[in-house]
Length: 107
Image (cartoon, rainbow, N blue to C red; front, side, top):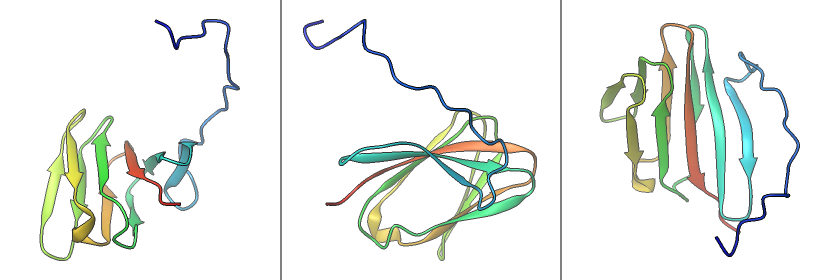
């Protein structure tokens, strides 16, 4: 309760339901980034260059997460933690679906 400021407010910005590259940054600071990924049938390549883990949460699934070695299907509201050592991967959408991508940001 000591750190809450009920009078503090930010700007609410509309989100694009189908961003051109499949990714839209929602929030970012020096510690982490949160992106909305998805759209209609297609995929979003994710390459954090081995600098951070990532967390993918399917919002209205199903989505597929593909790496070089394996694939995982996530249903709505399921989450997958991907260690940095896994390298780049791809999130694919067969239906109009969206997911959240969170990862740490290096300085």
